[in-house]
Each structure stands twice: as structure tokens, then as C-alpha cells.
Amino acid sequence: MQLADFLDFDAIKTALPGGSKRSLLQQLANLAAQRLGQDAGVILASLTEREQLGSTGFGQGVAIPHGKIEGLGRIYGLFARLAEPVDYKSIDARPVDLVFLLLSPPDAGAEHLKALAAVSRVTRNMATLEKMRGARSRDALAAVLLGADERDAA
Image (tube, rainbow, N blue to C red):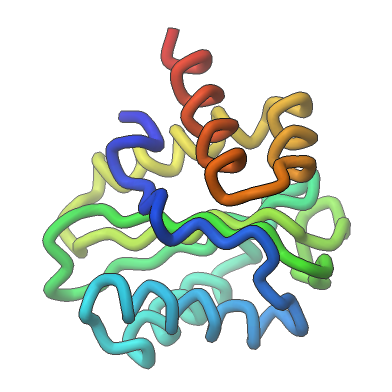
């Protein structure tokens, strides 16, 4: 599985206001709800429940909040670069400025893990992270993500 299989390239945000971890999750839930025709409260509850198990701040300024959503027909991904880094309680204590939201149907166990692995492959490459931080537009950011996707799939 690759990012292109589930990432909503039209919804990429290049300067999402950060604020707090809670307000960030609320903004992501609202964005995803608009794109998917789902209830933002249900999405936020799923993300919050997952965060209570342990932070999805994976280090290097990257977070991958994720949750299972009843009634969702497919895996859905949303990417946002934050205007200001947020204290996300990440494993390396570094503030987060790159966020991949991942939502899956409740029965998509293996596919959900493959999608998480695809995001993880892209985000553990330091050069790719720097390009993501330096991209000036949504199109440039999409190109970095697609390019990293293709390189890592090879």
C-alpha cells in the first residue's frame, strides 16, 4: 500500500494553525468530517480514545493520529503541516509540525496497518521530512509526498 492509495491530496494543508494538541485533533476531525460526510464528534472521539492508549507523536516532529470510524467505506488519510509546532507529548518530546491523520473502517485491520506502515516509511526519511517542511505550496507538498511514496515503494 502507498500514500496515493488513501491520502486526500486535495485536502493537504500547508499552514494549519496548531494551538494545542486538543485543538489540532479537533481541526483534523472537522476537516475529515467535511471531506467524508461524517460526524466530526465521532472522529474526534475515536482519535482521542486512541491517544489515551499512548501518544501518536512518533518523533522527528511527526504525529500520526489514527482511529476507526463506523460506516467509513475505505481508509482515508489527510496530511497537514502546521503553522506553529504543537507540544504533542511525542516519544522524543519534540514538538510536532507534520501530521498524518489516518481513519479506517473498524474491520480494516490489516489494511489499516499497511497504511500506517506507508506513512511510517515516508516519515522516517530525514531528507523527505525536510522537503515536506520546505515545500511552498500544496502542490509542491503533494509532489514531495508522491515522490517519497514512489521511491520507498521501489
